[in-house]
Length: 189
Image (cartoon, helix red, strand yellow):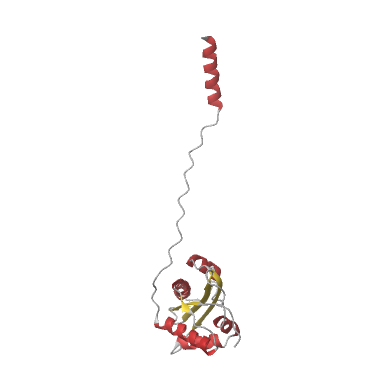
Protein backbone atom coordinates (compact mmCIF):
# COMPACT_ATOMS: atom_id res chain seq x y z
CA UNK A 1 0.00 0.00 0.00
CA UNK A 2 2.84 2.33 0.93
CA UNK A 3 4.55 1.51 -2.29
CA UNK A 4 1.36 2.21 -4.29
CA UNK A 5 0.97 5.53 -2.50
CA UNK A 6 4.59 6.43 -3.21
CA UNK A 7 4.21 5.66 -6.94
CA UNK A 8 1.00 7.71 -7.10
CA UNK A 9 2.71 10.63 -5.35
CA UNK A 10 5.70 10.37 -7.67
CA UNK A 11 3.48 10.32 -10.79
CA UNK A 12 1.56 13.35 -9.48
CA UNK A 13 4.82 15.25 -8.95
CA UNK A 14 6.05 14.37 -12.44
CA UNK A 15 2.76 15.42 -13.94
CA UNK A 16 3.02 18.77 -12.12
CA UNK A 17 6.48 19.36 -13.63
CA UNK A 18 5.38 18.51 -17.17
CA UNK A 19 4.79 21.49 -19.44
CA UNK A 20 1.20 22.59 -19.78
CA UNK A 21 -0.45 21.24 -22.83
CA UNK A 22 -0.23 23.61 -25.77
CA UNK A 23 -3.33 25.28 -27.04
CA UNK A 24 -4.80 23.27 -29.84
CA UNK A 25 -3.61 24.54 -33.16
CA UNK A 26 -6.42 26.05 -35.12
CA UNK A 27 -6.62 24.66 -38.62
CA UNK A 28 -5.61 27.15 -41.28
CA UNK A 29 -8.55 28.74 -43.00
CA UNK A 30 -9.25 27.01 -46.26
CA UNK A 31 -7.54 28.68 -49.17
CA UNK A 32 -9.94 30.40 -51.45
CA UNK A 33 -10.08 29.00 -54.92
CA UNK A 34 -8.90 31.34 -57.61
CA UNK A 35 -11.74 33.54 -58.77
CA UNK A 36 -13.46 32.18 -61.82
CA UNK A 37 -12.60 34.07 -64.96
CA UNK A 38 -15.40 36.45 -65.88
CA UNK A 39 -17.39 35.35 -68.89
CA UNK A 40 -18.71 38.79 -69.87
CA UNK A 41 -17.49 42.33 -69.68
CA UNK A 42 -18.78 45.63 -71.03
CA UNK A 43 -16.52 47.52 -73.38
CA UNK A 44 -16.92 51.27 -73.91
CA UNK A 45 -16.99 52.89 -77.33
CA UNK A 46 -13.42 54.18 -76.84
CA UNK A 47 -12.19 50.73 -75.81
CA UNK A 48 -13.88 49.15 -78.85
CA UNK A 49 -12.35 51.82 -81.08
CA UNK A 50 -8.86 50.95 -79.77
CA UNK A 51 -9.44 47.21 -80.35
CA UNK A 52 -10.64 47.83 -83.90
CA UNK A 53 -7.85 50.31 -84.70
CA UNK A 54 -5.25 47.88 -83.35
CA UNK A 55 -6.56 45.05 -85.51
CA UNK A 56 -6.69 47.33 -88.55
CA UNK A 57 -3.06 48.33 -87.88
CA UNK A 58 -2.10 44.66 -87.62
CA UNK A 59 -3.95 43.88 -90.85
CA UNK A 60 -2.08 46.71 -92.59
CA UNK A 61 1.12 45.00 -91.45
CA UNK A 62 0.03 41.52 -92.64
CA UNK A 63 -0.63 40.18 -89.15
CA UNK A 64 -3.59 38.27 -87.77
CA UNK A 65 -6.20 40.22 -85.79
CA UNK A 66 -6.27 39.82 -82.02
CA UNK A 67 -9.24 38.29 -80.23
CA UNK A 68 -10.59 40.33 -77.33
CA UNK A 69 -10.15 38.29 -74.14
CA UNK A 70 -12.41 38.97 -71.17
CA UNK A 71 -9.61 38.50 -68.60
CA UNK A 72 -7.27 40.86 -70.45
CA UNK A 73 -10.04 43.42 -70.85
CA UNK A 74 -10.75 43.32 -67.10
CA UNK A 75 -7.02 43.67 -66.31
CA UNK A 76 -6.68 46.63 -68.70
CA UNK A 77 -9.89 48.30 -67.49
CA UNK A 78 -8.91 48.00 -63.83
CA UNK A 79 -5.52 49.60 -64.49
CA UNK A 80 -6.97 52.43 -66.60
CA UNK A 81 -9.67 53.10 -64.00
CA UNK A 82 -7.15 53.07 -61.15
CA UNK A 83 -5.01 55.66 -62.95
CA UNK A 84 -8.14 57.75 -63.63
CA UNK A 85 -9.30 57.46 -60.01
CA UNK A 86 -5.92 58.72 -58.80
CA UNK A 87 -5.63 60.97 -61.87
CA UNK A 88 -1.99 60.16 -62.37
CA UNK A 89 0.00 58.21 -64.92
CA UNK A 90 1.59 55.68 -62.60
CA UNK A 91 3.32 56.27 -59.29
CA UNK A 92 5.60 58.98 -60.69
CA UNK A 93 2.98 60.40 -63.09
CA UNK A 94 5.57 59.56 -65.77
CA UNK A 95 5.44 55.75 -66.05
CA UNK A 96 1.97 54.28 -66.32
CA UNK A 97 3.28 50.72 -66.12
CA UNK A 98 3.72 50.93 -62.32
CA UNK A 99 0.93 52.19 -60.08
CA UNK A 100 0.63 51.60 -56.33
CA UNK A 101 4.01 49.88 -56.61
CA UNK A 102 2.45 47.15 -58.78
CA UNK A 103 3.43 46.30 -62.33
CA UNK A 104 2.00 44.30 -65.22
CA UNK A 105 3.21 40.97 -63.79
CA UNK A 106 1.20 41.62 -60.62
CA UNK A 107 -1.91 42.66 -62.56
CA UNK A 108 -1.71 39.60 -64.80
CA UNK A 109 -1.30 37.26 -61.81
CA UNK A 110 -4.22 38.81 -59.90
CA UNK A 111 -6.31 38.68 -63.07
CA UNK A 112 -5.63 34.96 -63.44
CA UNK A 113 -4.34 35.09 -67.00
CA UNK A 114 -2.06 32.11 -67.66
CA UNK A 115 0.26 33.30 -70.40
CA UNK A 116 3.00 32.29 -72.73
CA UNK A 117 3.57 35.94 -73.64
CA UNK A 118 2.23 39.31 -72.45
CA UNK A 119 2.96 42.95 -73.22
CA UNK A 120 1.37 46.24 -72.26
CA UNK A 121 0.93 49.70 -73.75
CA UNK A 122 -0.19 52.58 -71.54
CA UNK A 123 -0.74 56.23 -72.31
CA UNK A 124 -2.93 59.24 -71.78
CA UNK A 125 -4.51 62.01 -73.81
CA UNK A 126 -5.90 65.39 -72.82
CA UNK A 127 -7.89 68.00 -74.74
CA UNK A 128 -8.42 65.82 -77.81
CA UNK A 129 -11.70 65.63 -79.70
CA UNK A 130 -11.04 61.93 -80.44
CA UNK A 131 -8.80 60.62 -77.63
CA UNK A 132 -8.79 57.03 -78.94
CA UNK A 133 -7.60 58.05 -82.42
CA UNK A 134 -5.01 60.37 -80.86
CA UNK A 135 -3.78 57.62 -78.52
CA UNK A 136 -3.44 55.16 -81.40
CA UNK A 137 -1.45 57.72 -83.41
CA UNK A 138 0.85 58.21 -80.43
CA UNK A 139 1.36 54.48 -79.95
CA UNK A 140 2.00 53.91 -83.67
CA UNK A 141 4.64 56.65 -83.61
CA UNK A 142 6.46 55.19 -80.60
CA UNK A 143 8.96 52.41 -81.30
CA UNK A 144 8.17 50.33 -78.21
CA UNK A 145 4.40 50.73 -78.37
CA UNK A 146 4.39 49.99 -82.09
CA UNK A 147 6.46 46.86 -81.52
CA UNK A 148 3.97 45.60 -78.91
CA UNK A 149 1.01 46.11 -81.24
CA UNK A 150 2.84 44.23 -84.00
CA UNK A 151 4.09 41.24 -82.01
CA UNK A 152 3.51 38.25 -84.27
CA UNK A 153 3.19 35.71 -81.46
CA UNK A 154 0.32 37.28 -79.52
CA UNK A 155 -3.27 36.27 -80.14
CA UNK A 156 -5.41 38.22 -77.66
CA UNK A 157 -6.02 41.79 -76.52
CA UNK A 158 -7.62 43.65 -73.66
CA UNK A 159 -8.22 47.40 -73.61
CA UNK A 160 -9.17 49.84 -70.87
CA UNK A 161 -9.99 53.54 -71.09
CA UNK A 162 -11.03 55.86 -68.27
CA UNK A 163 -11.17 59.60 -67.70
CA UNK A 164 -9.74 61.33 -64.62
CA UNK A 165 -11.14 64.45 -62.94
CA UNK A 166 -8.52 66.55 -64.74
CA UNK A 167 -10.02 65.54 -68.08
CA UNK A 168 -7.09 63.29 -68.92
CA UNK A 169 -8.04 60.01 -70.64
CA UNK A 170 -5.96 57.00 -69.53
CA UNK A 171 -5.56 54.10 -71.96
CA UNK A 172 -4.21 50.58 -71.46
CA UNK A 173 -3.67 47.81 -74.00
CA UNK A 174 -2.72 44.36 -72.72
CA UNK A 175 -1.59 41.80 -75.28
CA UNK A 176 -1.29 38.10 -74.60
CA UNK A 177 -0.93 34.56 -75.77
CA UNK A 178 -2.33 31.99 -73.35
CA UNK A 179 -0.09 29.14 -72.24
CA UNK A 180 -2.26 26.46 -73.79
CA UNK A 181 -1.88 28.03 -77.23
CA UNK A 182 1.06 27.06 -79.40
CA UNK A 183 3.21 29.80 -80.83
CA UNK A 184 1.99 30.73 -84.32
CA UNK A 185 4.03 29.23 -87.11
CA UNK A 186 5.44 31.64 -89.66
CA UNK A 187 5.16 30.62 -93.27
CA UNK A 188 7.19 32.01 -96.15
CA UNK A 189 5.21 34.18 -98.55
